[in-house]
Length: 76
Image (cartoon, rainbow, N blue to C red):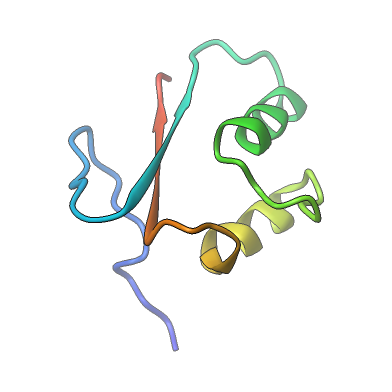
């Protein structure tokens, strides 16, 4: 099953309900810095593998977070 409503790319996200918001600062110098920041700010699970596939897995299956959704606000 492929859902197209999983991600909302907008400057004004809808924050209804029980949603966790993670703010990602501008100017991160590398992919490693971005993944480290995402791990910390989004409170990704301990098994997060610090690569794009692991990020995709975590964002597609939010069973690890108590909230009903996750909003990533990236300053860049």
